[in-house]
Length: 399
Image: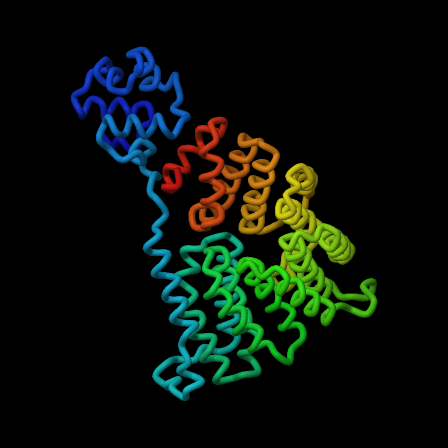
């Protein structure tokens, strides 16, 4: 019999029998009644506390994760770390600048490279982070060679390769390497105002994640107003999307700095541009539109410590049609912000619900983001947290 295929209660019974323990002896060792054990094993009573699962695992001499079945495997931190180190190595390679881009390496045509970069962005937006970690080193190498061979045609895909790399590394909490990728994107984009503005989006993310809110605010405002159309009413949607996204980044930086007035003003300005763009678009990989700005208001309110305002914006914005059109990564990332909002309002039940929704939407968002694992651990410690949250916390080793 494969115990991994059984419900939790049946797995308890399976391992109890394997350890040659009667229900009474097992109950005595747990400090429970025989009736309690019987109800657990029949699935009448749920195991909804981390401490109880740990006590059972101790008595049965198994790992707690075994009680949760085949999916109970911690995220492979070692594999992720090794992947990040390969990305770091790819970003630290200066063969081309030093004249060692040997002809032994094939150079991808710019069109084919653009397709590979587009695939990388799609992988990111579906929150398939492990797959993207594996893709990025080769993508960067090809993009660098193509740019060296044909700077004109290779410029845009190289900027985009650096952008998606920076976005991925921010998700993984690797801000130092992310900064290098964002800086490379800015450097390659220099001279092309649109590419600079696109690269600046990731720069803003990196600066905020690095705790440099004031620098982020200054840089984002400069980038936004450089790309801003003279008359917003005449601005093209791609241009407005970049400008509006940079204003959102500036607003989030202001929120982290504790400036609620600047946050509100910048969000309102971005909202005006979003109304002209509309939902359902992804100009320059921004996903910018009214729904995106509404979700950003949630994140800003959480930064300012206003959980009730954040919850109100969450409930209002996720009811829009545009919510369903956003990529899985964007929706799952927002649900993490919503979980923080509910925690600020002392509502661990809804905080747990947000985490579970995020895990269903994009599992890697919870399993591979250090920030998500921290929130999960915080929710799981609350005695009122849903049992499924405590189970997930044990699976990921954050209980």
